[in-house]
Length: 57
Image 1: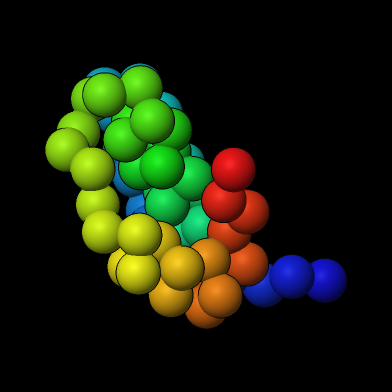
Image 2: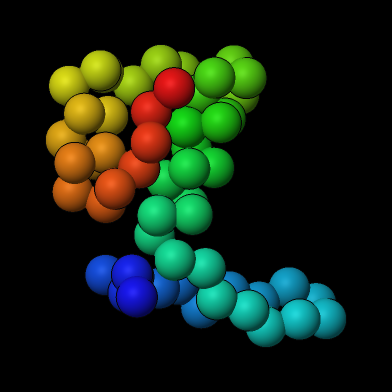
């Protein structure tokens, strides 16, 4: 079982839910690839991928 190191409690007007840090990092990666945010340094992504088992494509 892969336990999240950090989980965020989130809420909108109708729902409460939680999201793990690895999911948020994957969303950040997709936003970067789609041009929604500026490029982050490759070295940063490599460190994140190693620490949180994120697959970089």
